[in-house]
Amino acid sequence: MDTAKKYELCEEYIRYGARVTTARLVSAITSTKAVMMYRNIHGTGSETGRDPQRWANYLNKAQINGPMQKFLMCYWKVAGESLLEELDHEAVLEAYKVYTGVYLHDTHKIGLTVAWSAARAIAQKEPGAEVKFCPDCGRVFMHGKRILKVCPICIRAKEVLKVIKH
Image (tube, rainbow, N blue to C red; front, side, top):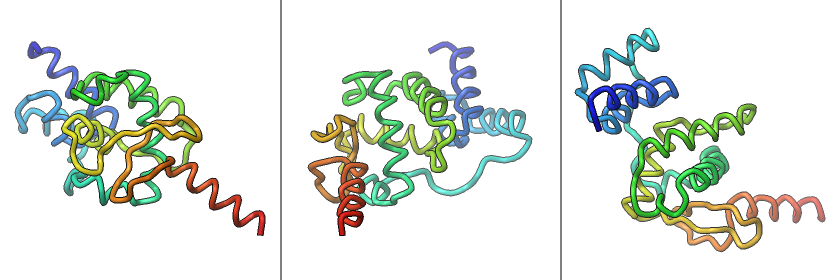
């Protein structure tokens, strides 16, 4: 990738909310230049804290599960089966743009850093980042510590139906 393309990719990741660390990893530009770019775009420093790491634990958070599943559907439509084998930074960004456009009014959304970290975990075949298709609804989903037979959205829908029936 040429230098201009690297800067363009870093800038787009930052504009869509990725942390400096993520934008730097994606574009392979220096940390100093990524920090300066972030400050120029947002007028402040990047948020601190660790990027998402262990997906088996992370996906058990209810506020992440549904939005992650929605992002994965967008990512699958953009990248296809190649997402299982390789991490394409541009495909992740394109899928994230689709995700934020389609689910614009959702209360809970994942950030680009979380989406990219999930894509990386899938491509690197990290434990807890296995991708499956739900036999009930056909959606693609990742499962964490629990081996799920259906997606978390369908599990929740079945739980709600049980409550309504009683």
